[in-house]
Amino acid sequence: MENRSLDQRDKEILSMVPFIIDRARIDGKVHNTPIVYEKNGKMVEEYPDGTIIVVKEA
Image (cartoon, rainbow, N blue to C red; front, side, top):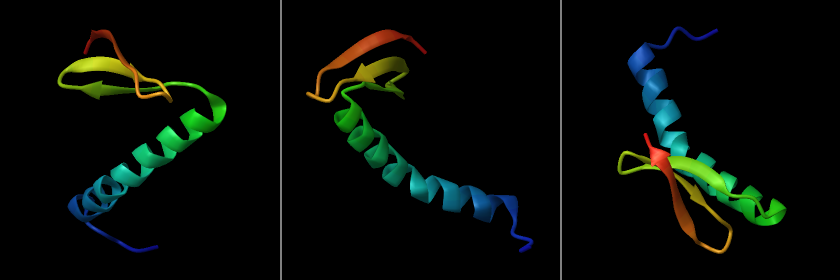
């Protein structure tokens, strides 16, 4: 097992976030379900048609 520093591992994980978000959007469209995430300090639901609804303050 590689002995990488925590900072390097964190950078690798953060570099994958955009791909994870894209995959969540694709899955949401396929299953007609919203994805939930934080945007500007608020929890939001984004629906497959692009509608975004604020769920609550984060």
